[in-house]
Length: 552
Image (cartoon, rainbow, N blue to C red):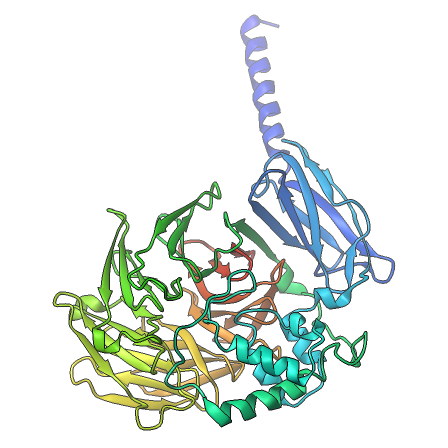
């Protein structure tokens, strides 16, 4: 064979070999099958892998044949600890794996029945399990903001013990947790007081003492659990990023155009950002103008330039963070409204460029504020001044013309504050007592919001002045917030059942994704720059940020 032909043949063979090697490079880094003696192959088991020394955990879900699959693009070579979530079960074999570059590791996971089912129940499971009326169970919706219902169920307080506990807990600020309690300096003007408060607390205390362990060593009712995910709900990859301290409460999480995640810290005076590629967290000290008052911020939202605006809660002001200069600017509430109970939770900066004014609100007395950013002047509306009891203005959201809309979680109202005339118009949701909580204004000026007490997703068409509601498929989901993606699909999360719900608003189809851990879901966010879209949320009591990527 001529040398030239031989040389060409060798080169061709090498190219073919390289091509074949690239084509057969494994797409999966870690695979296996999940099974148990009771069920055989198990669908809907969450399998989590955390690399030794890392702050990042990746989770996949087993399919109908019990198979799980970690893509090579999601976990790098190294040693991993494995864990699972499947209510009623726990790992029977060692949860460890070694991932090697260019190879697919295979580890089957055997599960056994759990020895402590109660420790695995969600808040929603507990509410479904305990005996009681709808009204009695609904009182627990005010408990989960600070702690789990399991703490109540495992307690041994009798009625008087609960009376003392309820009195003590009513003095805590709403950003309190068991590891970081903070006392509020003053009650809200809309709060119950005196004999009425005592009567309501005693009724609750009497009921709570019948569902805990005050009279027996075991519960007198069967424990119920929601079913595991199936079908479309298993087609997802979830990534969890640990925060550097357990006291960080990432209440709102939003993602900028560069892919950086920003979060408000509900219990501490910091603003944080997360690099999703490395897991690195950077914190910025937020001014503390009202020393001695509870610390923490609730909402964080972008303006058109993607600068960040925060509601400073008990620090009585709103703050702007310039991403370029990394400096804060603060607008303080006027002295006449700077009281012990002043609580500025929300801002709505998306349309302030229309007239130079920013909408905010005040939980201290169920009021709405509008700030002229140039002059610093604050305008105030007190819509429920004549009858404040039970009302609670929770969120404030501007439309494209910078009209301000607020939600009244205490009742069932959406209200419009006209930007030009100041006229206030109340609209009542179709569901009475729906408790509209938080939401967002879409590009069509439709206001989407969570009906926390109505267990529904709500939408108010601000142009047609009409409502539409979608009842969530699972009881005790109680959505805190709603956001809408580029496909007109609505997303929400639950403080009670650790599930993220996705609604196709055109067909009414729901998909519910289970999260790997107990997750106190608050603000929800969708990154529309990816296909499919990417969902983000903070674990407010778990000191982590969660990224959820649906696979279809």
